[in-house]
Image (spheres, rainbow, N blue to C red):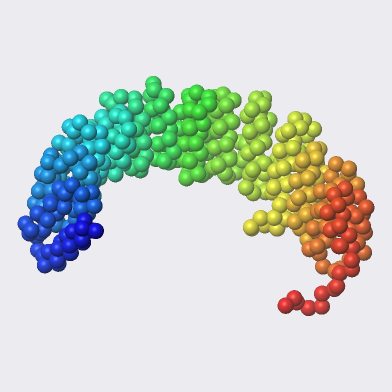
Length: 453
C-alpha cells in the first residue's frame, strides 16, 4: 500500500512539473525526477521513469544525461534504459549505447544492439554484422537492427560486409537486404546465390524471391538449372515463380531460352514457371512439352495444361484425354476438362464439355468428378447426362445422388421425366439415405404460378 501511494504521488509530481514546462526545454527538476525513478530499486518505479525517458524531457542535453546514467545502473536496469533510449530515437545517446556493447552481461549487449535500430549509423553496420554470429538474443537483436536501420548508405554497407563476413553472417545479411526491400542490391544477391556455402545460397534465393523482377528472370533460370535437386532447386523455383507472378508474360522468353538444355528436374520446374506466366507463347511451349521423351517433363506439361486458367487449353487436353496411355496423364487431362467445364465466377457451366469428359473418362475417379459437378447444376441437360450413369455399378450411388440434387433444383416442368429418373434411383441406390431422398422427390411438384415471396 505504501509503495503504491509513493508511486502515485511520484506520477502526480511529474505530471505537474511536465505541465508547467510543456512549452520549454525540460528543467533540472524534471530530469532529476526521471533519473531518480530510473535509479530506484523498485521495478515499478523504474518502469515509470523509463516511460518518461521514452516520451518526455525532449532534447539532446536530456538524452546525454540519461545515457550517462547507464554505467551506474545494475544490469537489468541498464537493459531497460538501453531499450528506452532506443525508443527515444535520439542519436545523442549513440556513444553511450556503443560503450554498453562491451558489457559482460548478454542481456545488456542485446539491448544495446537493439537500440541501434533507431539511433545507429552506417558505421555501425560492421558491428551489427559481427554480432550475427553470436548466440541467443544478441543475434536476434542484430538481425532486427539491420532490418530497421535507416540511412542512404546502409544497404551499400551491408553489401560491403557480404564480401568479408563469415558464412553464417552472410546468410543473415542477405535476409536483412530482403527485409529492407533493397531491390538496388539484387545483383549482389544473385552473386551470393552462387556462394560455396549452401546456407548462403539458400538465403540468397530466398532474398531473390522478394527483390528480383522480370529483368532478373534469365539469371534466376540459370541459378535454378545449376541448383542441386531437392531443397535448393525448390528455393530457386520459388524465386522464379515469384518473379513470374510479378512479370507474367515478360518472363516467358528467358525461360524458353533456358529450357533448351535443362535437365528433367529443372525442365519440369521451368514448365511450372511458364504456367505462372500465362499467355499464348507459354501455352504453346507447354503443349509442345506434352510430347517430350522425358516422362517427368511430359507429366508436368499435362498437369500445367490441366490447371490452365482459360479454355484455350481445351483442344490440347482433349487430344491427351483421347489417348489410352499413359492412363495417369489421360486422367489428369480429363480432370482438366472437367475443371474448365465447371461453372466459375465469370463463366457458366459447359454441360456439353462435361458430357464429353464423361465419355472420355476411363477411371471411376474422373467419372465421379463429373457427377459431382453435374449434381450442382439444375438443368434438364445435366439430368440427361446423369440418368444413364445410374446403371453403372461402380457409380450407382453417386449418380443417384446427383440425379436427386438436380431434380431438387428443377422446376415442375417435365415431371414425368424427373419422376422416371427418381424412381430408377429409388430402385438402384444402395445407400438408404439416397433412396429415401429419391423417394421424397417422386412426389409431384406444384407448378409455380408467380414469384416466391
